[in-house]
Length: 175
Image 1 (spheres, helix red, strand yellow):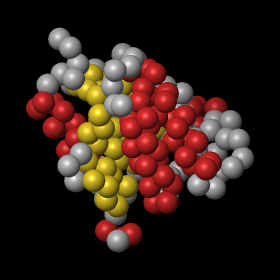
Image 2: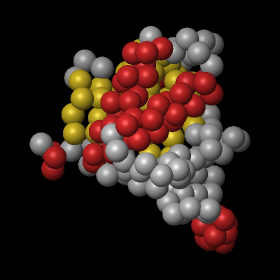
Image 3: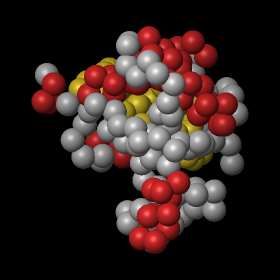
Image 4: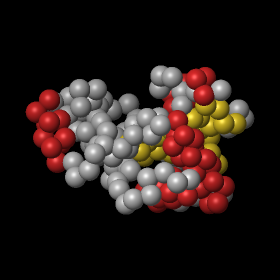
């Protein structure tokens, strides 16, 4: 079956490390409907000790820049953006692209970094994103709608969100 879109999730560096009590995704647990890797406190502590830099966080201003960068990237490559939501520890997107999923994910990360630097945030060299990230294939319109609802509305208090047909909106605290 041909995918109609990709659901891309990228964590900020140092966030949701393997062993996290909420569960994590790895290459064996990255298909729609598969369970998360269960938490493991010992593994989590080991992974925290291996960090080479402090964890990275997005505040509301950085989240806005990330969403705008995602929109610009999709426009630049003529990808159809369905949804983007930048949170304190990660971002989600749903998009249709005429490119391999890994290239899509890496372009989103690189251009978000470029946008943050252009906006004057974090000008020093540092890690902002984890290596890789999750790219799940979306196979039908119902699945796409579920991904959009999950990414835009089921993540707790929204930060910076874009939804096709609705435009960009931010947390009520920022309005």
